[in-house]
Image (cartoon, rainbow, N blue to C red; front, side):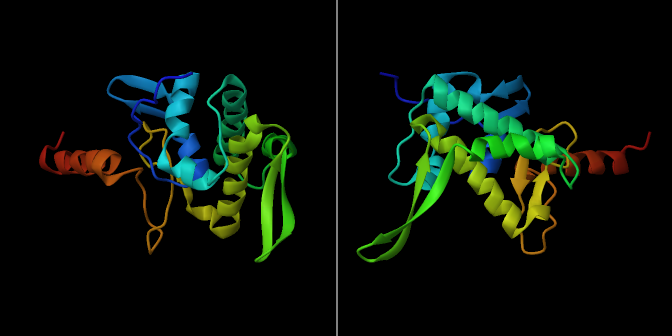
Length: 190
């Protein structure tokens, strides 16, 4: 049995599930980090409120197979986020390969219509759910899936601001640094 998960060390959490998975890699003053470099890190990510909310009563296990499936979908999302649209067949195929491991089945329940997610194996549940979440974001407002404007930052976000002008992963981090740099440049001419 694995020990209880460590607290989530990432600087940006709370984005939609597919973006949150992309943000399992980050850079800070100590260097580059990857929460999914181990099964223990996967346990930390799976224990987060966002993942628990998205999975509902379905369970995900922090094991090597689940980690491999998540790394596959994260690689697919990386390719899609960085590629210009329209995407080429190879780029599309990376995400479709993950989606091929699951499906939504329509059901009639005692209280009306319902759905159930079915996956090939339990290890694909979270990866398939992440891929499905990305399709949902693409269907809503694909132009609001963005990379942080700081070229040194590797984080992404889904812009839910009213006017759609968010530029930074967070104002407390990258946004504040950009403001401080602009202020310094104005008051200290070269």
